[in-house]
Image 1: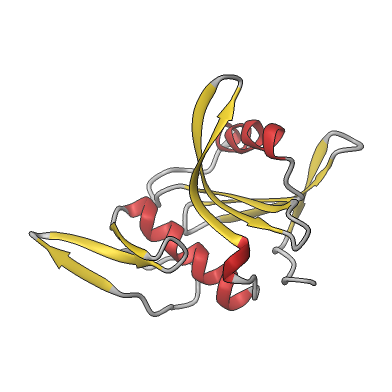
Image 2: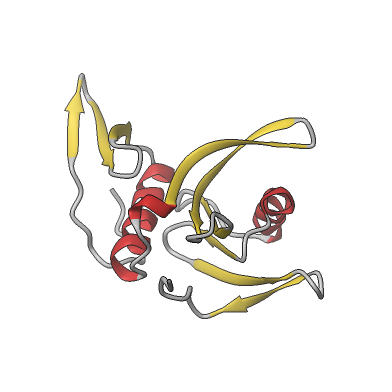
Length: 148
């Protein structure tokens, strides 16, 4: 797989009938390795190893309903009190992060109300903190480390 703009992490792979899978330690199962899944698994390791977010606070690929439509988010991180701390949207490396990408995560966040957002294609990472009072988001250089 393509080298991404993350530190190098250790992953478990398996090959079944010519299909390579990667082990997702959050979902505790092997997932078919696609370019987007490669980005997602690197983000998970970044959150666990670099930002020290507890594994038990991270959720990967769950369904949410928005305006009657069924959508799926990539990664969320909860706070100890159960509120949403971080919403992550992962794209494959061939997808350019655009305003449309931010509009997508902003629509998801209308229902979820996360404090922070991250959008990445594995090469470019964008972080922002929501300001609900001013109804805008403020871009950050990086995400905060986990805090209790």
